[in-house]
Image 1: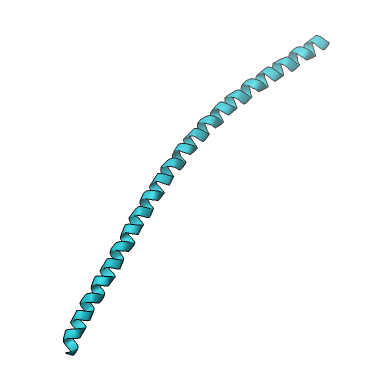
Image 2 (image 1 turned 45 degrees about the vertical axis):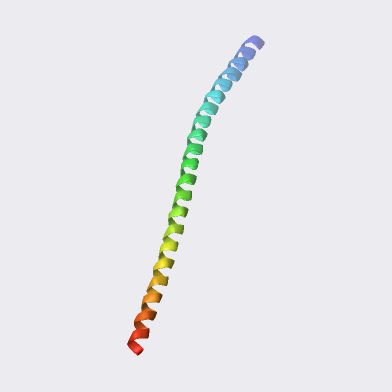
Length: 79
């Protein structure tokens, strides 16, 4: 009876080890996919920051030009 329990115990340990190794492979694959997605998202965010900064600069230039034009028109209208 002792040999049978030992054989069952060994089989359980081996099958548990196989299941854990296959689970670890699956988790490693998922982590790799997640890391690639995160890197891509970081790249997209940095591109968006650059575009927003350009947009803010363009708006500032347009506001400045509008102020200059309004000042010139106001100067000639009151004169």
